Length: 160
Length: 83
Image 1 (cartoon, one colour):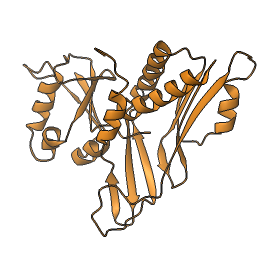
Image 2 (spheres, helix red, strand yellow; image 1 turned 30 degrees about the horizontal axis):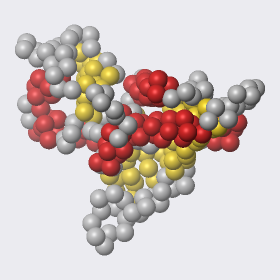
Image 3 (cartoon, chains in turn green, yellow; image 1 turned 90 degrees about the vertical axis):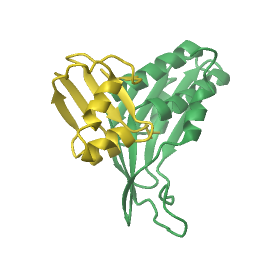
């Protein structure tokens, strides 16, 4: 299965290895791992040093998997790629924890790099996940970032 | 009946994650359903005030003009923040 939404951690090395296991036509595997950063909480005022102590990921069961599969299908329509693996964790995560994994295999690096970045950019704006940051001063839902919308828009060509 | 789902900050503001509703007469689009719910007032006004509120019908993201009919699953939520 190419798309997973799960509470459990994942083994990025094993996932990357699986994309070329048993075949000799793969020339490139590009991958991305997203992590929880022990950052200042988004939106806290100047001088407030509330650090993110944990993060809770909520999602829309059913739609999430469909949205991720649609993004993978769109990537397959744009680039000559072989295998795709997307894993997104949900539930409570701590700084340093892995949140998301995307890997793409192809004959050549250009397609693998491009498709991997495209899938991440579209995931950020189209897959129904929401992050809530927990700090010493309480919880706060993370606001969507305009830069994420811009990152997704730059892949659009013509009418789409 | 339509099944209506709410997520993330909107779910918390409303104090509920879902409800079933018989579609009122004249409510045939996602935007009209949002306005109908927001008109309940108090916490429900969050449906009108949430910045860039998103919606899905049958688990597909749609705009406010998308039709809604009996049997549909409609979801309202803030812009997504995964990844």
